[in-house]
Length: 191
Image (cartoon, rainbow, N blue to C red; front, side):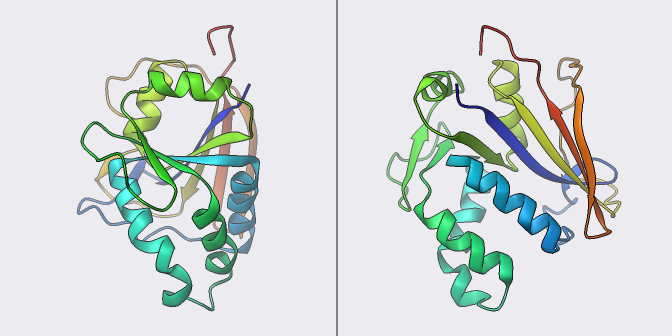
């Protein structure tokens, strides 16, 4: 069965964006970029929430024109363009362009996970990851902690979520700046 991987960048104090929605603090070096590409290569489907989809679709189709010298842009832009994408949303239209469809509930992902293929990658989209976790549809957490304290903003985990014990599968330092914490959810017959 395909796995659903949640890849997220967070501040040292646990936020995925700053108090004003800013995401200008993430530090992507060559080692972290290579790790990110490895996750993309494990996947044949990207999953987003509405907010992250809006951000990704406004940047990646034009990224090579905006930052042609950036190594990560050179590597990831073609992958983003060719990889099928889904957005979990109850408000967006079905035709979003860029090879993107819409699912209306987390339960729709269960059938997709049963289909043959590579793994499914969720980037950012904390509310989507939380919903999928509640439905038992999230298999791996790939959390990258950045050396910044934001002092507020959107938390990586919603307050009041159910307590979940997650074994640490891997940790490592990237580029002497960021730390990966990878946790795998114990699988059950329900997944």
